[in-house]
Length: 407
Image (cartoon, rainbow, N blue to C red; front, top):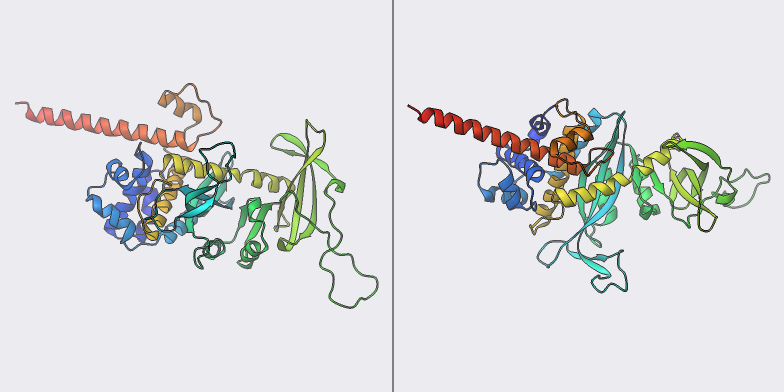
């Protein structure tokens, strides 16, 4: 797949003829529009020739499945990239008013008592999102592929129900989670579908060694947990991680947060102020993963946070102005699809094999030197190519019309 049309054509069987044209209009509109990515802005930035209200009806009345679009994107990416893992996280969109479906208060973790302009609670929507972290030979790309709305207290849209609906529809793999998901219910659901998990442990997490065989028979059930793991007493050794030598320790242990045996990896660092050790703990149910891979996978989990930020800033994730649950869910899913399609165009296209210096020189940027192509640079460069093609086509049309008018 070398062009944008070839990538979008993969999703053609999921839509009708008019629906596919509207799908392409939303994807291209999110990419090329420079202002707010509302339905109006998307319509103005796309090449869609139909009426404006057909785009509104595409979100609310048209017959198509947003989950099927997400599954198609996952299948496409997994057929291209052989080394991949899942990243699961939650995000929110701050909104105002009461006319939209699912608005509720959620806690503001950035609240400061001395700042009178902030509130302890924000008013908006919460979403659960799944990303596909693809690891190539020379690059690592996080594709945001699936997003679903969360409604606390709802039987079908709460945290566990949404997680279960996503896990039941994706191929088996390793799922990376943040330490906020340390919950036995969450891990039990994840493991029941055959997936593997990799999660960071909280600072007060408790781990246990496997129980030692008993020399004499005892009444009652057998012990499940052995002695408690004392983290500072573990046997630490040096490994090379991201070009640095770090002190780590690992062990096969049990924890009450997970129903299965886990591989615990502890990284030890020295605090410059207190001259004491700090411990970073991460564990996984995949006992075959090496220590280096476990640390690398969790470090790359941060790519999901940057994907949320870029989707909100540049692809209109939180700029929807629709009211129903169906319309909001479809809008945010299309926003995720536009990010993934753009990244796929840059990472797997033979026509767009560019490095950071070439893109910055083409855009005239000399004050910004990132280590890799960011999503903002990708989008700006695509707009640059689109405008150059648009104005060149307009110039050719103007010259042709002028020659036809000449006697």
